[in-house]
Length: 149
Image 1 (tube, rainbow, N blue to C red):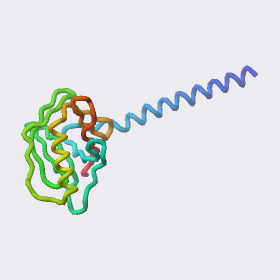
Image 2 (spheres, helix red, strand yellow):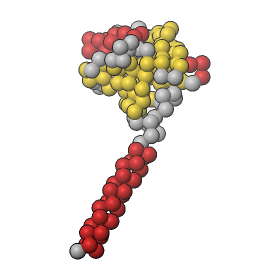
Image 3 (cartoon, one colour):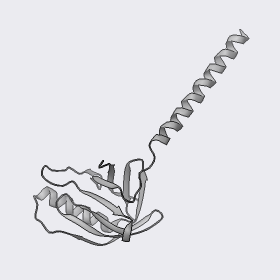
Image 4 (cartoon, rainbow, N blue to C red):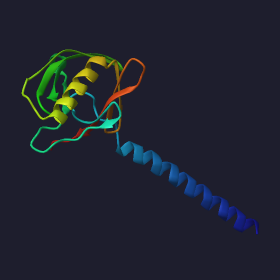
């Protein structure tokens, strides 16, 4: 009886240890994407999903390391600008965009995207998700990393 109990305990410990190591291994497989030089596709603004419309570029941004340069698209127009980053704090400045007219849904996404960028004060990356936060730590915009190759 004692042998069977000992065997059950050893098997249980083995399963628990294996489960813990699998969980650690899983998190090691999904490291956080780099904030810099990653193509970030906009997936939500102020909690509402962003839809990419056919025949239009998806809303996205790329923060380039050289000269702290920002590039991307609003879902309608191309955007460019600069950013200033210190640890988890970030601020966007001098943002410009082309001025092509688009259908109302794309123009609304563009206005909301540009407004959100002006209000951003912080960022966080969790795996392949980037969240830009406002003063009250509320999520203003959520992005997913897209690998182009």
